Image (cartoon, rainbow, N blue to C red; front, side, top):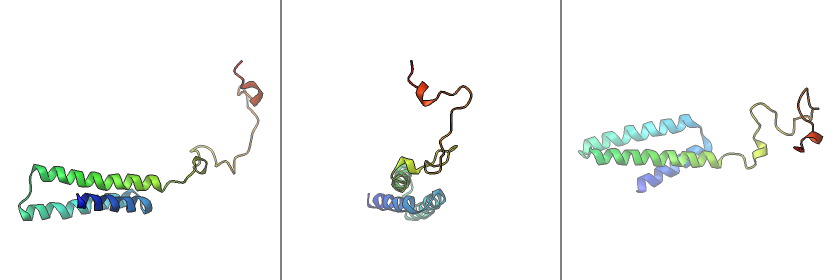
Length: 107
């Protein structure tokens, strides 16, 4: 349980400061450290596989929470994929069959 909590905090820190390549490397490092340790100690079995999956889930959950917390505060700060941010957008008149503001009443 303590190891899972530590891995959650490590994932949280990675999510706050780095991208997905860092979490992939952290997951691989966790696997490459834990499996040989369990094999050398003679503890390898089905339960150990489930614990390993739990450790990776804790690491990934921390990463997802950290990534979410590192997003900008307001939705207006995020630009649309096909439009510039609101500060740079310029109003334009309706074209062809588009409705204007006075025609949007739904009558």
